[in-house]
Length: 103
Image (cartoon, rainbow, N blue to C red):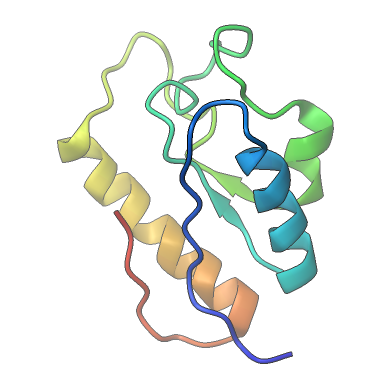
């Protein structure tokens, strides 16, 4: 299969973005990098549409449930934490060491 760069999914709440992301990641041997402002926190499972354990186990996920509620997470912190994940995920899915962008 031809290498595919990062794919960004965006849209309104409850339209199936998460299911589509998992399906694409499975098909393309990719990984998911969360960009939800609340799903990044550990312990907010019921207040967000955080993927359940079965879904999380299907493909690697990054920045989902990783930050304790006692810590803040903002743009200043997301840059260093998230900067590694897209690049590593891209390398894993393609075997390439090319740089990939993130937002």
